[in-house]
Image 1 (spheres, rainbow, N blue to C red):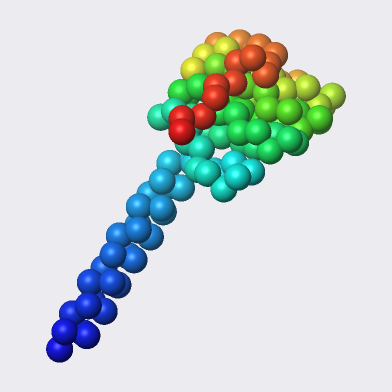
Image 2 (image 1 turned 45 degrees about the vertical axis):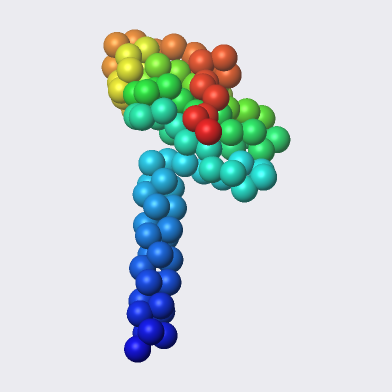
Length: 123
């Protein structure tokens, strides 16, 4: 009887750890090169660059890797243009898309993405 109770408690503890890890990963957290989870600010997203460094967008902002696999961020959603340059909406939570001519159009106007606009993840 005690063996069954111990097994039940162990299974419950494993499930709790599993749900916690899943909830953390569900927030957009990703593991760095050392296996440590790195999490974006609320409303942000993270990516790993070519060196394995984690960079995140600001809340409502966009993030993409450029042709050199360097994280580039902007105030709103980002998209690569036909030359491979990353262009972002100038508005937080704003959209970016390409039109029929292959030109990038954005909510509130477009701005060039930059590495300086990216945030360091929450540890």
